[in-house]
Length: 306
Image 1 (cartoon, rainbow, N blue to C red):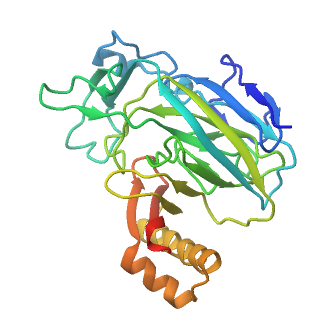
Image 2: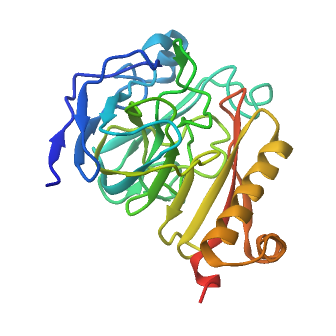
């Protein structure tokens, strides 16, 4: 029988490490409730000014809830993470941090904005700008296959700091399991973000989250894949990803994975699947600021399949 678990709010990890002992063990089908810290781990608060950015302790950035062990998960399987619920906790922040972001040399910062999230929009930026809240978790991943302790920020084929804004409530994320038990962790919650996260922050915020875990044996995924519910202006879509230090290679990997998905899941020939990607697929840069790896995603609308 599926169970509901509550992840201890005081247990976090600041690095990926497949040698870490699991905080919680769940079975496929179980649900886990989280209270997630914002990404600075309390170093930035509702009353902070830009002065705080110069003194950030980067060893405390990215407090992820984890690791979580999933019974029976083994390398080659796909860990399926269904996002059942997400709620912000009233406030958030975004910043330009010196040395980071796509235009770090041109717009160096420091610059900090604090947002009130209580009315369903992020206010204020200017009196004429209101940003819709679309909560998602910027980081969800399993422990990487390589032994050692690794920074959270760059994503990988194991997932991690994907910053892919389509992972909203109702989405389903599939992660290629790298080690026994998967050792899943999550955090880095965002109230809103555009594709690319170009200044290196979304609206970073504390968040309530509810996730349900499943397992597909022997899926052999090359990188994370997503089914996403409708988001304006498009409807529901299946998403494949390419992850790596070269955008062209990552784009090819994302398309290659979508061709395989369409061929296997919808009975098209490899050639017709490739043509469909060109006619109906959207190739996007989902994340380009967490060097050295970038994420390119290929989106295929559900509506093209009868």
